[in-house]
Image 1 (tube, rainbow, N blue to C red):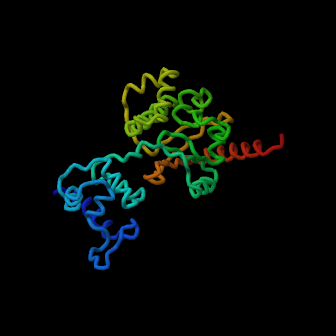
Image 2 (cartoon, rainbow, N blue to C red):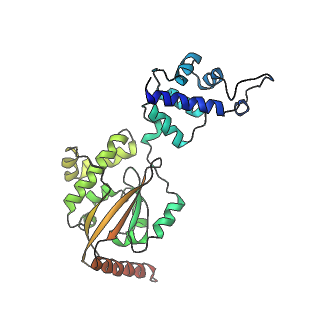
Image 3 (cartoon, rainbow, N blue to C red):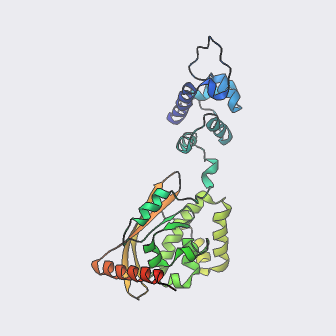
Length: 281
């Protein structure tokens, strides 16, 4: 008996004992002695055999398919964290794992806007920029005026000439970004939206075509970039990326001026950006 299979069986046993017949409109006999649901009731509700479910609770080495785990998860009304837990114990991939996140919690947007003079944005698994602060727009361009595809960091890195020119070491940064993108692609290779970006770039970018076939993989979360400001001054910025919530697939990236002169230059850039944006037309 493996530790994972034993843990999986114990988990469902506890959930069964913690459930009540009333939740499932099961008629209750006055002499009912079972705490929670009976095994045969769970088996019936989940569409599995009683023998199979009994063996599952006992931690036996039986075949546990995606469909069966999904059915049990639905029966017990498991939340996202619990679903992920049981699928990992069953050594199975969650059916929804190739879904790309599109929503950013309001609390995270508040955090973004509280980062004074620190450019920051939130991306999803496909590297779409979903939320950003004014500082990020001052440094990288006004995201609110971009299309959804243009807000994809990988697409923009290869296809937007002015954006490419902002980076002193464009090739190194682009290759690093692509290696991270390729790493995520392994998990989302069946996702149509993810493949849309890949197909667009394979068609229109020679560099992407060449480097994509190298299969370089990375999952780095920090580094340094030299970015040219609108004043022409090079800004040296450290960046750090943080997983917001593993179940949501969101990443918060924050840029910090590395030296005092970088801080002064960026503050000047940002103040100019804000004053221009708010000026009457």
